[in-house]
Length: 390
Image (cartoon, rainbow, N blue to C red; front, side, top):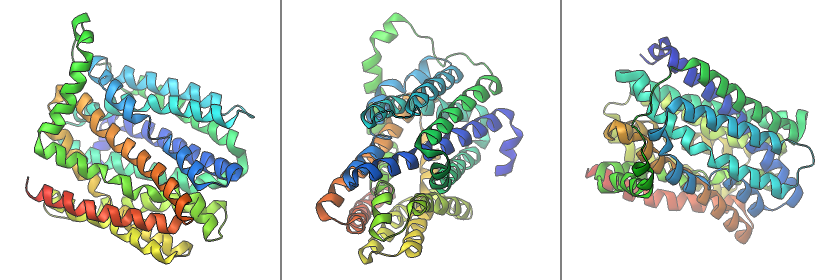
């Protein structure tokens, strides 16, 4: 029973902290998207700013995720949250130049992978045999946080302004840090760190990457996750697309919320599929396929339906993620998870950035989203074939 995981106090702490920080983070993304598009009227600059919430993970995820295996995981999460609270607080100062806001945003994102790696590595310790149920609840909560942050983002920005929305985001990180510090047990670092160990830092990073790339199942699971490069393109183009079809700023939040809303429904439906791992490839294909409907430049409601269908199919990421974690040795989870997750988020950032460039070139956000859907469908078919052979 998934509800049973809430009987575990530490899981409740992790769950609550995640809900706070995720919702605040998405609120900030909505605020920044609207701010940049209003100032520049450029799909490329809007998408690039959105990509800055993802691309730094390519560096930080590889270099810093190993901290989750070297220091107490509670400490890593608390420090990461406090760093982000301070940096976002600086972003919230009224009148901060856009270039400085973007620079601070990069620094904020550099602190995210160590937090995520520590959290992901700690969940199996907290939940034991209930891990897959807990992981499912955790990922659904993540989508619910996205939904709340995106759907309410436009309204909050209208009420509080960009600075107010960023201040709320800073507060959510601070609340998360307090919850984690006092709601989780103190645990030792997974392994002792010596000077020799630090000297071998790069070798251990390479070992984490090698662990994933040399194991066929881990490699294919990771690549299935990285297909999000294509399905994330509509997020980066939400503001330009809303402008293209002549709807207001509030619709930007709805366009951003449709995908996570669909994933919540998909995660619930996934519970009833027998042998869920067998469906990974099929669902990966159907994550990108609905985006082809954007060739017709749909109005708001049909566009929301297409995004929700894509989000529902993307629930396969829950099973893919849980399977990946269970296949990795416990003492290597932080590094392996960091490598895979940093690649996932960096892929999303690359997808958003490329989407913005293509939209500027084609002059149409709708055509760009459809192209992303076509490319994603083709590559998902290849990944599905590879998974069927593992």
